[in-house]
Image 1: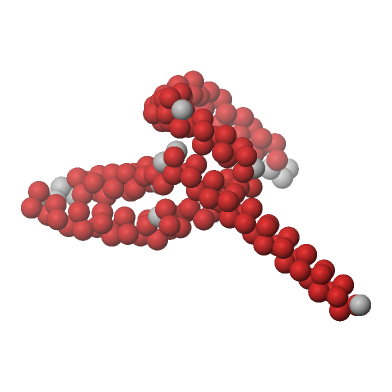
Image 2: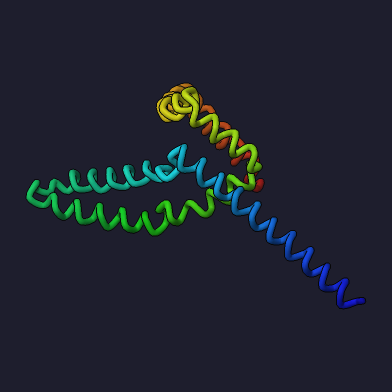
Amino acid sequence: MLNVRAFFAALLLALISTQAMADAASHAAAAKQLLKLVNADQIAGPWYGQVNQMFGQRFAETQAPESKKAVLERYQAKADATLDKAVGWDKLEPEMVKLYTKGFSEAELNELITFYKSPLGQKVLKQMPALFAESMKMTQAKLEPVVPQINQLLEQMTKELAPKK
């Protein structure tokens, strides 16, 4: 009798864990679908651009002749390969899937997928990078005048925290 109970308990546990794995797999699949839809694989693109720009600036600073442009391109390719090892989509995707499955239920992910497939969702995807960039410029412009004040406050706090002589 004990063996029968143990067998059914094990069977029930196996069925539950199989269902949980299936649920986790479909949850992850929904996250992957959303990430693809929102072009998350391009998230590291700006880093590549900035690094390539740094190499280009250094090339210009060295006043290397145009005949040495192949050297620049070779080093930019090496830098891209280095970045691929750190932030290539194959490295980021598993962590992004975990992040999205932790932050959103499968039903919520499916709602987001439906939204981003809609005409409005497509417009949001197209407009958001420009809106974000403009928002950052606007915020930076508003912050620039207060940077000296913030630095002054930081200096005052440092003086106040310094040990008394």
